[in-house]
Amino acid sequence: MSTNETAAGSEPSPDRQRHPLARGIELLTLMVDTGEDSYGVRELGSLMGVSASTAHRLLGDLEKLGMVGRTRDGAYRLGLEFLRLAWATTARLPLEEAATDILGQLTERTGESSFFGVYNEQRQQMMFTHTVESPHPLRYVLPMHTWLPLHAGASGLAILAFLPDEARQEIVHGPLPALTTRTRVDPDKLSARLDEIRRDGYAISHGERIEGAISIAAPVFGLSGTIVVGDVGITIPESRFDLGTESELVRVVRDSAAALTDRIASSRVAIRPQPNRVESNRVESNRMQSNSQWERPAR
Image 1 (cartoon, one colour):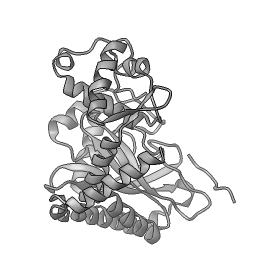
Image 2 (tube, one colour):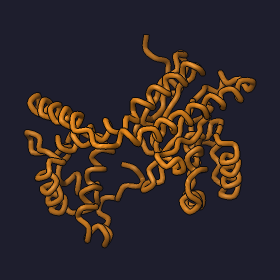
Image 3 (cartoon, helix red, strand yellow):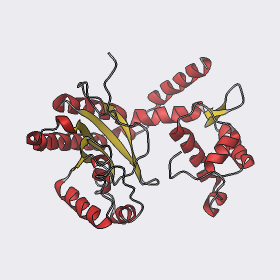
Image 4 (cartoon, helix red, strand yellow):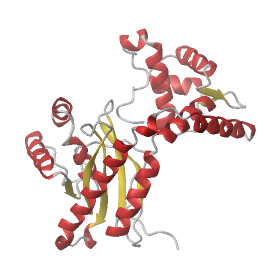
């Protein structure tokens, strides 16, 4: 369970007690983030820090809307209506396709593993959601779909440096656990480094999240072009890193991040309603219902 998730047995805040909609969204978020196929009522209640009866009422409301469904043994899973909405939204803003395409080109040009990380402002953490692995036998395999702190490693720093000042200061002066001996945990030194990253437009780190890993990352901005939503970067084994190629690698990473930012900005048109795509997703939903850090790859 993520450190930002509510601990079992803790009292729900007054805001959550007054807003069942917010608690329903929180429940759906937990089901997505934890990645299990199904959940028991008590299990979800424990994850949310609420009683089993409260969790059961929330699940009942969500089930009526199709946002959750029941398995044969009575457990709960994400519902087909939730999946339909997720598919429809993805079709209108094809970020996955754009990121995969750009990361593929980045890995082809550098020969190194590339990644796209996204930022969550509620958690104030980042997560790797897309990656294209290096063809080299020795490479770093990223921890996918896991929430990670921003202060350790270029993949987090490239986001942290471009956050609004209030959010940035809150993180810098909050808990800064040392993930390796190279992780910078002094708030003043970290702030100075973030100033440099904003000036340069990219971050580079040497073994600050994982020992022996070098990373270069640059920010990706959302529809407005001013709000950072994530970053694009590469990871390199320290033993393979050539200081003479650093400037070229930085240029390619920055170009890739800018290309993804441009792709997001150009998707404004794609956000308009597209009934045909929604209908095709509904058909696919019905079809599914009827069918109810280093590694050497295996050869």
